Length: 257
Image (cartoon, rainbow, N blue to C red):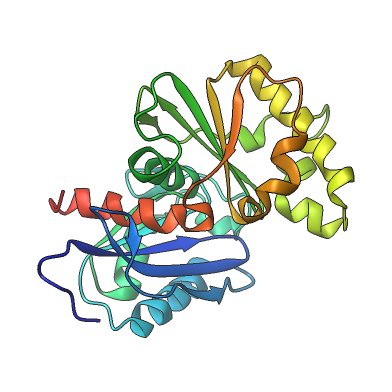
């Protein structure tokens, strides 16, 4: 894909437990500049297999330039330190280097929910908001981003809080749990509500933003959330937030913004 020199454009790719999706992004406006492409995450999701799918996605856009990539794990200095919904061989792997080698282009890697949080701060529901905001992404697992006075505090893992007892939150109320158990909204909503009440108790946020694939159905669950001291809203960028945030992060890493 050729780039308009007047538009600062970066390819954003969002790696999830079930899908890998991407699109070129105007990093000054957060706008996707082409229709998003989604490919299935390979199973098992080993570094080599994921690298091949990411390369396929890059080739579909005939992309030459900076790439931002999200990953569903703790990411520190280009290394993945966990692997909740992908193959365990990602633990302590030099993931940024692996993916850069797979595509032959410069890559900036960050946690998927952190990318969504960054996008919502710049272009979405957290823009210009003071105080403490938590972004929760509900998909294969539960990702989280903590934003304090507009500053992202990276690598929180609120989806791995022990909740309810003897379990973790993402095994109780992720989007995948709803699908796997074929829960109707009236059955799922109390689970999510209880988890959000737990976040209230632990963190006293001023705002919680719900993202991930489930955010497209916000009207089905947000009005049903009760007993909370904070406001709950849907992510403005919905399930594109990770793509946008990844692109912005790569743009920053390459001195474009």
